[in-house]
Length: 271
Image 1 (cartoon, rainbow, N blue to C red):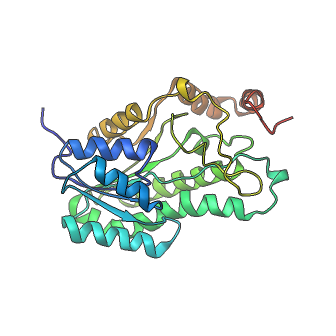
Image 2: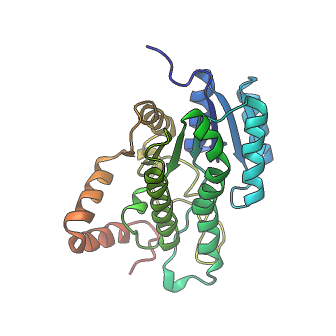
Protein backbone atom coordinates (compact mmCIF):
# COMPACT_ATOMS: atom_id res chain seq x y z
CA UNK A 1 0.00 0.00 0.00
CA UNK A 2 1.42 3.38 -1.02
CA UNK A 3 2.26 6.00 1.57
CA UNK A 4 -0.06 9.00 1.04
CA UNK A 5 2.25 11.36 2.94
CA UNK A 6 5.59 10.57 1.31
CA UNK A 7 7.19 13.85 0.15
CA UNK A 8 4.10 15.85 1.09
CA UNK A 9 4.74 19.30 2.56
CA UNK A 10 2.73 19.59 5.78
CA UNK A 11 2.41 22.63 8.06
CA UNK A 12 1.34 21.93 11.64
CA UNK A 13 0.67 24.62 14.23
CA UNK A 14 1.15 23.94 17.93
CA UNK A 15 3.34 20.92 17.27
CA UNK A 16 5.56 20.48 20.33
CA UNK A 17 3.16 18.62 22.63
CA UNK A 18 0.05 16.45 22.62
CA UNK A 19 -1.73 15.82 19.33
CA UNK A 20 0.50 18.22 17.40
CA UNK A 21 3.73 16.52 18.42
CA UNK A 22 2.24 13.09 17.67
CA UNK A 23 1.27 14.29 14.19
CA UNK A 24 4.75 15.68 13.56
CA UNK A 25 6.40 12.45 14.67
CA UNK A 26 4.24 10.17 12.54
CA UNK A 27 4.51 12.36 9.45
CA UNK A 28 8.28 12.71 9.65
CA UNK A 29 8.59 8.95 10.01
CA UNK A 30 6.39 8.54 6.92
CA UNK A 31 8.65 10.71 4.81
CA UNK A 32 6.69 13.95 4.87
CA UNK A 33 8.34 17.37 4.85
CA UNK A 34 7.00 18.96 8.01
CA UNK A 35 7.01 22.60 9.06
CA UNK A 36 6.02 22.96 12.70
CA UNK A 37 5.49 26.04 14.83
CA UNK A 38 5.12 26.75 18.52
CA UNK A 39 5.62 29.69 20.85
CA UNK A 40 8.17 27.91 23.04
CA UNK A 41 11.62 27.98 21.40
CA UNK A 42 13.08 25.48 23.87
CA UNK A 43 10.33 22.96 23.08
CA UNK A 44 11.07 23.40 19.38
CA UNK A 45 14.78 22.75 19.93
CA UNK A 46 13.96 19.61 21.92
CA UNK A 47 11.72 18.41 19.10
CA UNK A 48 14.52 18.93 16.59
CA UNK A 49 16.84 16.89 18.78
CA UNK A 50 14.30 14.06 19.00
CA UNK A 51 13.60 14.01 15.27
CA UNK A 52 16.94 14.50 13.56
CA UNK A 53 15.93 14.89 9.92
CA UNK A 54 16.20 17.34 7.06
CA UNK A 55 12.45 16.86 6.61
CA UNK A 56 11.64 18.99 9.67
CA UNK A 57 11.55 22.78 9.83
CA UNK A 58 10.83 24.30 13.26
CA UNK A 59 9.65 27.91 13.42
CA UNK A 60 8.98 29.90 16.56
CA UNK A 61 5.62 31.59 16.01
CA UNK A 62 2.51 32.66 17.88
CA UNK A 63 -0.53 31.97 15.67
CA UNK A 64 -2.50 34.75 17.36
CA UNK A 65 -0.12 37.16 15.58
CA UNK A 66 -0.94 37.63 11.89
CA UNK A 67 2.64 38.48 10.94
CA UNK A 68 3.91 35.28 12.58
CA UNK A 69 1.48 33.19 10.54
CA UNK A 70 2.58 34.87 7.32
CA UNK A 71 6.22 34.23 8.21
CA UNK A 72 5.48 30.58 9.03
CA UNK A 73 3.87 29.89 5.65
CA UNK A 74 6.61 31.76 3.77
CA UNK A 75 9.26 29.70 5.56
CA UNK A 76 7.54 26.43 4.66
CA UNK A 77 7.30 27.36 0.98
CA UNK A 78 10.87 28.64 0.86
CA UNK A 79 12.20 25.43 2.41
CA UNK A 80 10.03 22.81 0.72
CA UNK A 81 8.69 24.63 -2.35
CA UNK A 82 5.00 23.91 -1.74
CA UNK A 83 2.28 23.19 0.83
CA UNK A 84 0.08 20.10 0.49
CA UNK A 85 -1.57 20.01 3.91
CA UNK A 86 -2.20 22.63 6.60
CA UNK A 87 -3.19 21.31 10.03
CA UNK A 88 -4.47 24.07 12.30
CA UNK A 89 -3.82 22.39 15.63
CA UNK A 90 -2.64 25.18 17.94
CA UNK A 91 -5.15 25.97 20.65
CA UNK A 92 -5.73 27.04 24.22
CA UNK A 93 -8.64 26.31 26.53
CA UNK A 94 -10.32 28.01 29.45
CA UNK A 95 -12.57 26.98 32.33
CA UNK A 96 -14.67 29.55 34.16
CA UNK A 97 -18.29 30.62 34.36
CA UNK A 98 -18.95 33.59 32.09
CA UNK A 99 -20.48 35.50 35.03
CA UNK A 100 -17.24 35.09 37.01
CA UNK A 101 -14.75 36.11 34.33
CA UNK A 102 -12.80 39.09 35.67
CA UNK A 103 -11.66 40.41 32.31
CA UNK A 104 -13.09 39.62 28.88
CA UNK A 105 -9.53 39.67 27.57
CA UNK A 106 -9.48 35.98 28.58
CA UNK A 107 -12.04 35.14 25.89
CA UNK A 108 -10.27 37.39 23.42
CA UNK A 109 -7.03 35.45 23.94
CA UNK A 110 -8.78 32.13 23.33
CA UNK A 111 -10.45 33.46 20.17
CA UNK A 112 -7.22 34.94 18.83
CA UNK A 113 -5.41 31.62 19.09
CA UNK A 114 -8.11 29.09 18.25
CA UNK A 115 -10.09 31.02 15.64
CA UNK A 116 -7.90 33.80 14.30
CA UNK A 117 -4.85 31.53 14.26
CA UNK A 118 -6.76 29.23 11.92
CA UNK A 119 -7.90 32.15 9.77
CA UNK A 120 -4.43 33.70 9.50
CA UNK A 121 -2.60 30.48 8.62
CA UNK A 122 -5.27 29.39 6.16
CA UNK A 123 -5.28 32.79 4.45
CA UNK A 124 -1.56 32.70 3.72
CA UNK A 125 -1.48 28.99 2.87
CA UNK A 126 -4.50 29.10 0.54
CA UNK A 127 -2.71 30.22 -2.67
CA UNK A 128 -0.21 27.39 -2.25
CA UNK A 129 -2.90 24.83 -1.45
CA UNK A 130 -4.76 25.86 -4.61
CA UNK A 131 -1.66 24.94 -6.61
CA UNK A 132 -1.37 21.49 -5.05
CA UNK A 133 -5.06 20.67 -4.59
CA UNK A 134 -4.24 20.43 -0.91
CA UNK A 135 -6.07 19.93 2.35
CA UNK A 136 -6.95 22.32 5.19
CA UNK A 137 -7.58 20.68 8.57
CA UNK A 138 -8.90 22.23 11.76
CA UNK A 139 -8.48 20.37 15.05
CA UNK A 140 -11.74 21.28 16.71
CA UNK A 141 -13.77 19.77 19.55
CA UNK A 142 -17.22 18.59 20.50
CA UNK A 143 -17.37 22.09 22.01
CA UNK A 144 -17.68 23.25 18.40
CA UNK A 145 -20.96 21.37 18.04
CA UNK A 146 -22.37 21.86 21.53
CA UNK A 147 -21.65 24.78 23.84
CA UNK A 148 -20.16 23.50 27.09
CA UNK A 149 -20.75 25.17 30.49
CA UNK A 150 -17.73 26.78 32.02
CA UNK A 151 -16.12 26.93 28.59
CA UNK A 152 -17.91 29.80 26.86
CA UNK A 153 -14.80 31.24 25.20
CA UNK A 154 -13.48 27.85 24.15
CA UNK A 155 -16.82 26.75 22.70
CA UNK A 156 -17.22 30.07 20.88
CA UNK A 157 -13.79 29.69 19.30
CA UNK A 158 -14.51 26.16 18.06
CA UNK A 159 -17.97 27.08 16.72
CA UNK A 160 -16.29 29.95 14.86
CA UNK A 161 -13.56 27.67 13.51
CA UNK A 162 -16.06 25.14 12.19
CA UNK A 163 -18.25 27.82 10.62
CA UNK A 164 -15.24 29.33 8.91
CA UNK A 165 -14.05 25.97 7.58
CA UNK A 166 -17.51 24.97 6.38
CA UNK A 167 -17.85 28.22 4.46
CA UNK A 168 -14.34 27.77 3.04
CA UNK A 169 -15.19 24.22 1.94
CA UNK A 170 -18.26 25.42 0.08
CA UNK A 171 -16.40 28.28 -1.58
CA UNK A 172 -13.82 25.80 -2.84
CA UNK A 173 -16.24 23.09 -3.92
CA UNK A 174 -14.79 23.08 -7.45
CA UNK A 175 -11.19 24.17 -6.86
CA UNK A 176 -9.76 20.82 -5.78
CA UNK A 177 -9.05 21.89 -2.20
CA UNK A 178 -10.35 19.65 0.59
CA UNK A 179 -11.43 21.10 3.93
CA UNK A 180 -12.14 19.09 7.06
CA UNK A 181 -12.28 19.41 10.81
CA UNK A 182 -11.76 16.77 13.44
CA UNK A 183 -13.17 16.46 16.97
CA UNK A 184 -10.93 14.23 19.09
CA UNK A 185 -12.95 14.23 22.31
CA UNK A 186 -11.03 14.36 25.59
CA UNK A 187 -7.41 13.53 24.81
CA UNK A 188 -4.39 13.05 27.05
CA UNK A 189 -2.55 16.27 26.25
CA UNK A 190 -1.27 19.49 27.76
CA UNK A 191 -4.22 21.68 26.76
CA UNK A 192 -6.08 21.40 30.08
CA UNK A 193 -2.92 21.99 32.11
CA UNK A 194 -2.44 25.25 30.23
CA UNK A 195 -6.13 26.25 30.27
CA UNK A 196 -6.94 29.74 31.47
CA UNK A 197 -9.01 30.49 34.55
CA UNK A 198 -11.46 33.35 35.14
CA UNK A 199 -8.57 35.79 35.65
CA UNK A 200 -6.65 34.65 32.60
CA UNK A 201 -4.03 32.73 34.56
CA UNK A 202 -2.88 29.23 33.67
CA UNK A 203 -4.76 26.69 35.78
CA UNK A 204 -1.78 24.26 35.83
CA UNK A 205 -4.07 21.35 36.65
CA UNK A 206 -6.63 19.18 34.90
CA UNK A 207 -10.06 18.16 36.21
CA UNK A 208 -9.83 14.87 34.29
CA UNK A 209 -8.05 11.56 34.84
CA UNK A 210 -5.56 11.79 31.97
CA UNK A 211 -4.72 8.08 32.24
CA UNK A 212 -8.26 7.21 31.11
CA UNK A 213 -8.25 9.48 28.06
CA UNK A 214 -7.45 8.67 24.44
CA UNK A 215 -3.73 8.91 23.73
CA UNK A 216 -2.39 11.65 21.44
CA UNK A 217 -0.76 9.02 19.21
CA UNK A 218 -4.10 7.29 18.63
CA UNK A 219 -5.73 10.63 17.81
CA UNK A 220 -2.94 11.53 15.39
CA UNK A 221 -3.27 8.19 13.61
CA UNK A 222 -7.02 8.67 13.15
CA UNK A 223 -6.58 12.23 11.88
CA UNK A 224 -4.07 11.11 9.26
CA UNK A 225 -6.30 8.25 8.14
CA UNK A 226 -9.18 10.73 7.74
CA UNK A 227 -6.98 13.05 5.66
CA UNK A 228 -5.86 10.17 3.44
CA UNK A 229 -9.48 9.08 2.96
CA UNK A 230 -10.55 12.65 2.15
CA UNK A 231 -13.20 12.79 4.86
CA UNK A 232 -15.22 15.94 5.54
CA UNK A 233 -15.37 15.62 9.32
CA UNK A 234 -14.22 13.21 12.00
CA UNK A 235 -15.84 12.83 15.42
CA UNK A 236 -13.78 10.25 17.25
CA UNK A 237 -15.58 9.08 20.35
CA UNK A 238 -18.94 7.42 20.95
CA UNK A 239 -19.76 10.07 23.52
CA UNK A 240 -18.95 12.77 20.99
CA UNK A 241 -21.07 11.20 18.25
CA UNK A 242 -23.99 10.84 20.68
CA UNK A 243 -23.64 14.46 21.75
CA UNK A 244 -23.75 15.68 18.14
CA UNK A 245 -26.82 13.54 17.44
CA UNK A 246 -28.70 14.63 20.59
CA UNK A 247 -27.89 18.30 19.94
CA UNK A 248 -29.83 17.98 16.68
CA UNK A 249 -32.70 15.82 17.90
CA UNK A 250 -33.37 16.83 21.52
CA UNK A 251 -31.36 19.97 22.34
CA UNK A 252 -33.48 20.79 25.40
CA UNK A 253 -32.86 17.39 26.96
CA UNK A 254 -29.17 17.70 26.22
CA UNK A 255 -28.98 20.97 28.18
CA UNK A 256 -29.70 19.09 31.40
CA UNK A 257 -27.47 16.13 30.54
CA UNK A 258 -24.51 18.37 29.74
CA UNK A 259 -25.04 20.49 32.88
CA UNK A 260 -25.12 17.44 35.13
CA UNK A 261 -22.10 15.89 33.44
CA UNK A 262 -19.88 18.93 33.90
CA UNK A 263 -21.17 19.65 37.40
CA UNK A 264 -19.57 16.36 38.47
CA UNK A 265 -16.10 17.45 37.35
CA UNK A 266 -13.57 17.90 40.17
CA UNK A 267 -13.51 21.59 41.03
CA UNK A 268 -16.44 22.33 38.72
CA UNK A 269 -17.57 25.98 38.80
CA UNK A 270 -21.17 24.84 38.28
CA UNK A 271 -23.41 24.96 41.34
